[in-house]
Image (cartoon, rainbow, N blue to C red):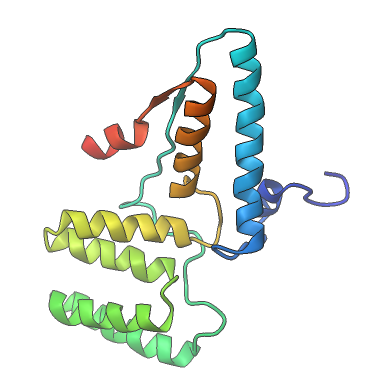
Length: 177
């Protein structure tokens, strides 16, 4: 917009911080659902078949854009834990590193960076299910909002059912391959 970002998506793209599970976050989800419903309604009225794919992002190889600790976390305490974690990573001590990541997540359970590092660790340890969960949380907690969040895929599935669109599970196929 001329007077600055007007929609929540424009705000997110401009780097505005939208806290996870906040009023603004839920407004962004509602805006996405309204826009998708409007579009699918028009196609349904015109009897045009629609195939819509779920969203996907490269979770295991793309670090969060803005995923450090939140403002309420003591930066010095975080720095000390991060130094220990990195030392344990260099020493190839996954159990010790995992314990440090648990401590970091106790300080800030929405630190996308900590979830991402836990995903990396679980991948190295062969724990693919735990790694996928951690990578998904890193994606969802990234403070640069709306990077293919899980909530969007739920909306895509819901609205597609309402308007008779066919959902193509792109995310599932991406993970499969």
